Image (cartoon, rainbow, N blue to C red; front, side, top):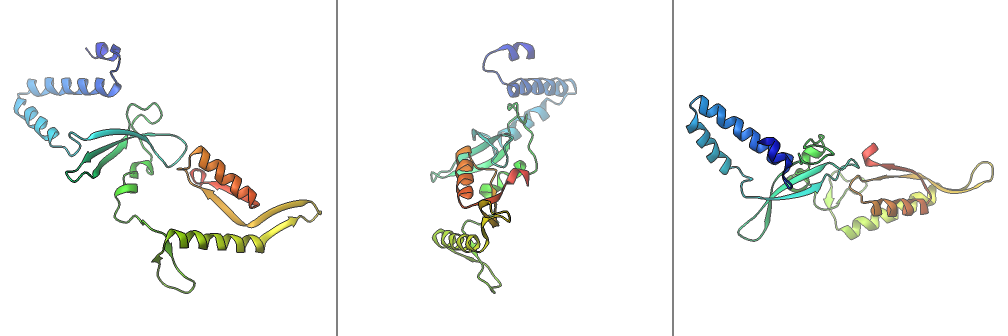
Length: 203
């Protein structure tokens, strides 16, 4: 029967596994006289927090491997959407349902109470951080980049060759960058004369 299911178009490996496991469980339960336990387990399944949830497919944002994720969401009565669970996609040929330690914590990107949701700034000599606006943070970053570049810019090397490089700044890109974002960041940093470019997935 499983072989026949696998040959049907539109039937995934997950569907085949569900049928196989359910059939095996039913045989064991019936053979041992556990029909009642089987019925109770069905009730428990219906009460799972992902029961009736919308299943959405995505890709892990942490590195370039491209592991697939399955996110379960439910719409609340007030119209908001609640994220219930994120797990590896067993139908993906890339990760086959498995996730690395970073990917396994993907749900915390959206639900962790410790997640910082605004830029933090600690002034020189201060003992604590304070929340600031994005305009303030971007302006401060631009000022620091300008000051560091002016202080460490090298126009020519020891042999008189024109190099126009900035040796006092390094840049680390994020693994969640799209190809376009990575290209833009690289062009911008090279334009500033940066030599030291790195990528988060290799760190």
